[in-house]
Length: 390
Image (cartoon, rainbow, N blue to C red; front, side, top):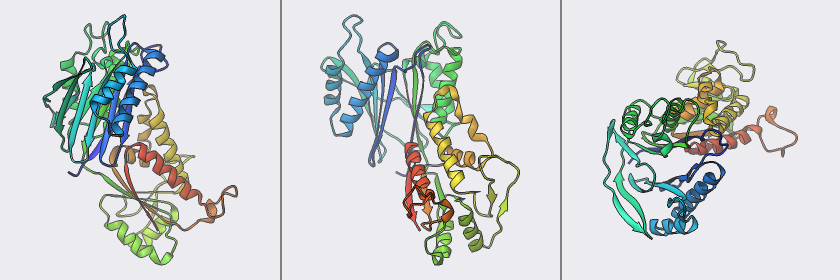
């Protein structure tokens, strides 16, 4: 099955709390993806600690081959039931997605996950398993491209209680919402942002509960090829550009020297764009047949900063709006976030003296260091990366 598992989550803290009582743990492996969403009892620091322990225990044990029975037993005995309220200290949802399309899920105490295909809610047959007097609901099913799986904490269901909606958002309305958005948005990140934005409105800016949504969108692969830096051996310029242009997917060139090589080998003109001027980012350019042409080191460095802020920002900062700017770094960041599942990096190994810093070893280029940082941040987005050193 040719697919990309796009995973994202977003949260709102309960009004007045610095920490969220929900916790999401994601582990990406070559053969499968493990997702755990835990909801700690109460709110604030205590709930955060309980949810963190639960999600870490579950994800780590499953990653190392433990069964669901062993995992749940460990959680139960680590976090006992509250004697006063007779409630579990933390509820959880576990999702395992395999590369061949198989899915396994286990739920305890959380709202049921939603599985949507072609805009329709698919009923999942679940079985109840008694693990040390704890009832866990398990299910197995298969995915295909376009499917959407959503996990939410009860803060989503309660959104609007006592405010805009007397009884909260209600489950049937949540289902309708996701059925509709599954046909509109292709990015898991955008789906969770839209949902959390809706919950914030329903709560009138003062969430009455920790609110978390995890979205898993099964997407067709979207490939980007990025060429930066000249090859170490200039005689390889022609074959490099030919291979680059034959590759499937969008084409991006970062760096003045790389752009000159591509334009020369394609016998095309480089046209610099002066329509949008940003003092922090050099102007973009265009070459016929190339989707985006930018400057190299400064633009890539700015792109990394944008991506870091995007991944680390809280919901209230709503950083997604800044991705609509016309500078090269914002355009590049937006392509990575919204239109990239696989990245082929074509990195020239020739060292540009202008990029050297006397504090670094003589053979270490700032450009190569920035490429390493870019790879790290893109892996956090879940993008699969292949690097060709030229």
